[in-house]
Image 1 (spheres, rainbow, N blue to C red):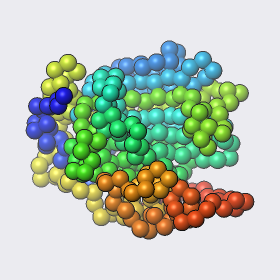
Image 2: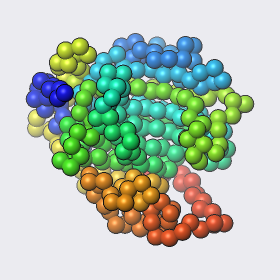
Image 3: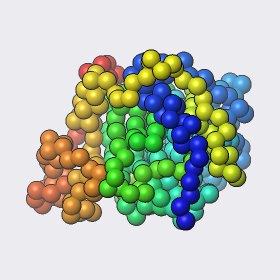
Amino acid sequence: MVMKFPYLGSSLFLFLALVSVFASGFEKGLPILSFDEGYNQLFGDDNLAILRDGKAVHLTLNERTGSGFVSQELYLHGYFSASIKLPADYTAGVVVAFYMSNGDIFEKNHDEIDFEFLGNIRGKDWRIQTNVYGNGSTSFGREERYNLWFDPADDFHHYTILWTDSQIMFYVDSIPIREFKRTAAMGGDFPSKPMSLYATIWDGSDWATNGGKYRVNYKYAPYVAEFSDLILHGCTVDPVEFSSKICDDVQSPEQLKTRITPSQRSKMDSFRKKHMTYSYCYDQTRYKVPPPECMVNHQEAERLKKFDPVTFGGGKRRHGKQHHRSRANRSEADSI
C-alpha cells in the first residue's frame, strides 16, 4: 500500500529553513522544551529522573532495567537536538541512543535515524555510531562509526539530527560529521514517514563492545546518561489522520540557505579523515559492490583499508600490532 502524505507541500519552507539553521548560526535561538512540554516516559519507572524544573533528564541503567523517553508528537522532518553527558569508567556493553523511529506504527516497514553511543572497557573511549533505515530496510545496515576528539563522559556535548525530504545531517557540537543524501537508486529506503524522537539507555552486551566480547558489569552500576537542552523543531503530524498539524516557523526567506557552507564542509571532511573508523560503503565483507547511494571517496577507502585490511579489503589481518589513538584535547575541535 502506498501512503500519501498531503502535508509535504506545506512543509517545504520548513525543509529549506531547517537546512539553513546551521549555515546562518541561528540554532542557538531555537526553543528548548521542558520534559513535560515535549516528552513522555517510555520505560524504566524511577530509572528516569526529571531535574531542573524539567530542563534536564537522567536516564539510568542498573541490574533491574534501563530507561527511556519519547516525544509526545510525531514529526515529519525537522531539527532534533540534545546536550548529552555519558556515563564514565567501565561502560562496556552499555548503549545510549538518541534516535528517531516509527517502529511502533509501521512494524514491517519502519524508518529510523540513529545516534548510538557504544560503551567500552576502562581506559578505552566511547564510540559513536550513526545509522539510517528506511521502509523496513533493517537488513541493509548503513552504519558509520567514529571516535571523538573529546571524552563524552567529562562534560555535556551537543548532538543533532537534521532531517529534510532530501537529506539527513548528523552534527556533534554544531560540526557536521555525516551527510546522507536521498538518491533515486535508494527507492523507498530513505526515511520518509513521520517519526517520534527517542532517548534510551540499555544493555547491549551481545554486540555493543567488540561484538559482545565485553559485557555490562553491574558492579559499576548505576550507569547514568544525562540529557539537557532538548530541542524538537519541525512539522508535527496527526498520528491518526497523518495530516499536518503545525510546522514551526524558522527564519525569513532571504535567510534561507540549502547547503552547508564551505567552512562546514571542510570541518566535516577533517572530522571524517581523523575520526571515522567504519563506513558501510567500504565494507567489502558485507557488500561486494558499494550500495547505490554511496559516493566513494578513494582517500577514505585507502585510510580505512589500512585501519582494517580484512573488512575494507587489501589483505589479511595482521596480528600482534596494536593501533592506539592518542586522545586529542578539546582544542582539537578548532582544527576540525
